[in-house]
Image (cartoon, rainbow, N blue to C red; front, top):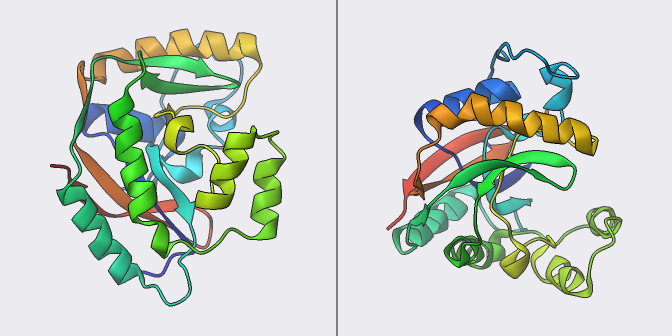
Length: 227
């Protein structure tokens, strides 16, 4: 296994949905390759600008946020523990996955709250936390600049990231931050673009261990099916 600066657990979709998402963002983490953006008329700015922020992560939903390995831990042992957790973690069905604006960006999200997704993510966050190096002061300061709630501050200190446990919201990011009117317009255009390839119901049946290279781009290491 290659050495990476950070590791994470992602959900990567399958089939046409993944291919269209990777093309849209311009990066395929599975192949470790740049992809060509599609032709989509009527956009207010080039796709390369719209997708610049999320591109390096590839098309995914974050389950265990990126982290550096703790001193004394190895990527080999991390992968072994990841496999163990997947064998005892149940897959989750999402009745409807839709394109929606979340704050200032656009993402594919469940149409309704799904506690099973929070349970799945919490299992990975807790189960892999012994492999996570403590967040640096710079990393903590960066997260705190987002005006965290007291509960989010607690989770930042405990887990290195504020949006975990009950604050976790499953989403596959499709844009960087945009003005509200522009984001709303993008939602309608991406709904038409992605609707034909999004399975309904949608199943989270596997997870992927990924790593960040020296340029900041994430690469697929291995995938495991859930129970």
